[in-house]
Amino acid sequence: MAQIVWTEPALIDLDEIAEYIALDKPTAAQHLVQKVFSKVKRLAQSPDSGKKPAEFTTNTRYREVVVKPCRIFYRVQGEKVYIVYVMRSERLLRRYMLGDDI
Image (cartoon, rainbow, N blue to C red; front, top):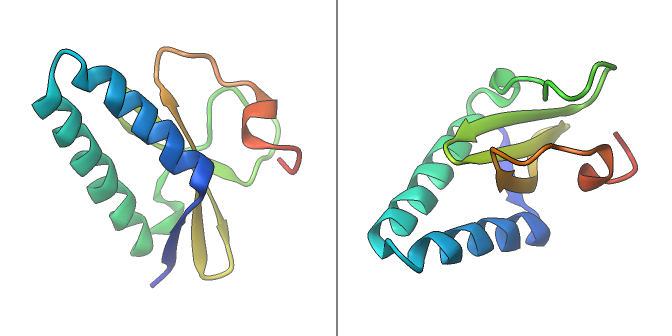
């Protein structure tokens, strides 16, 4: 069973998305955060269950899971799953968003 490790930038990303949604629908924002954490928690059992981001045509160690309207990017390193980036699904992913070590 893998350990889930949320990076600080990923938590900030999720918080900003939830805060924006909460401006109009506080309950929806709360449900979104709960759904994201629930889906990410499942990665402990199946770390490779996410798909490779479609934007990357070359090999990458990053994978993603989707909880609309969010895409959650992570990488597996040993027995740990690092959640590295959360973004709105309508945005286009750029390589620099995940860092230099793709």
